[in-house]
Image (cartoon, rainbow, N blue to C red; front, side):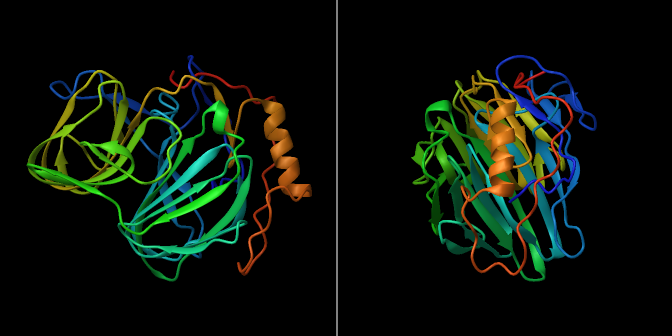
Length: 320
């Protein structure tokens, strides 16, 4: 999935503090909720489709641009619409596609042609560079699209694509979780991860204690139903040091987390790089070169890159 904004913000990430972006809000958790947690409100962003499908983007956020290596979270639906995302490039990241309803067809420059359905995982590793498209018929779509930043030693690896039609589950009193990425509750996903992290869909039925790795920071996003202490819309950030998250209710949530990502990165449009000059080179290659390959079978032209801002892009802090 692409960032389809025609005037994308410079997204500054890394280990140190950084300046805010407009349109984001952070709210401390209410008194009595998990101490130190934050509610990260989403931005309404057009995704694409015949009726300008909208998504709620909670990462990157002005106050909390990353959670572990997770650097991008878009949630969409449920909505009757058709997804149509033309061929576009990525570098330095993995795309993690997860559906709750509907079916989306993935094509990429490696020759992959793979539909994804609920409970399945499409994982694309961009590495040094890849291009892909996504589309669906007119139907009810509900899902999340996530990006994982690749660490310095892995960010220029060869691109790759994985489809996992079935994933392991973890069940304890009050919940069952499908483990999409990393490890949760002693269960490990077969999907390739390049940093210590977790990504899981958790189905809550009653009261439950979700196990957390205390070395990780985490984020929890309500997908449907009612699950306390979450609320519909914002992503709840949980700092490291926790061994569990207490939840109660009936519904589904997305749990992501990982070791705090110490490197500084620059995110602009669909690229993850380390400085301004890299981003300029990525954009030039997409617009003029052949390094991202081509996507065969998509009925339409590739997505042109937006114009770069007039100032230099600078890597800055991962948290304000």
